[in-house]
Amino acid sequence: LYLGDCRDILPTLERVDAVVTDPPYGVDFSYESYCDKPEDHQAFVDQFLPLILDATSGPVCIFPGIRGLWFYPKPHWVLSWRKTFSVSRSPFGSNNWEPVLVYNKGKKGERASDSFEATFMYDPIASGHPCPKPVKAKEEVLLLASLPGETILDPFMGSGTTGVACIKLGRKFIGIEIEPKYFDIACRRIEEAWKQPRLFDEPRATPVQEALDLEPQPQPKGRGR
Figure (cartoon, rainbow, N blue to C red):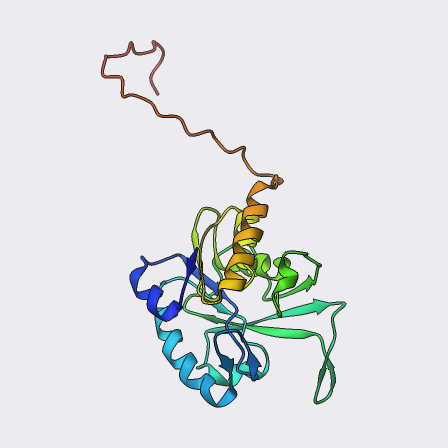
């Protein structure tokens, strides 16, 4: 986990297998370190997006928000996630879905659908962040964009939701967050997730330091193939 500006840190990292991230939306929301003004957001996207695309040859999955769609170039595909039991206002009355932009390669993992549901679940640690995503939403995208054991990057880590989902699904995780307050929340959430037992996961092996035995070993007797 890195505390800092992803525009400075991304060029120093090795390439990853996939990117799953939720950048600021450009809707005039004030964070501690900057105000996400719409008039400045296009230049911001133009700065970080090439760095993200260069970080992997695998899928790049971005939660842009509906209004944020217009700041991004044409993607390879668009996923849809429905916010179960969560409705917000729209110019046409109400809204309960959001897009996920996919760049580079398309389907890679286990999912067979480009649409999914995710319910917001209260997390007392994540409640310190103004806009946490459901862990389920990140899990669904990870199941589409990656395989177990692969390394996932989130350059806008926020409250650490992508990292929590990676731990639950057996992925490695690299996260970057510029806000110290949210970075601390992410560290706590990911640490708590690491402590939790995971269903259908192999037990973690205890690290053991062993010496290499150079003595020749007797070969078992038996029939060959």
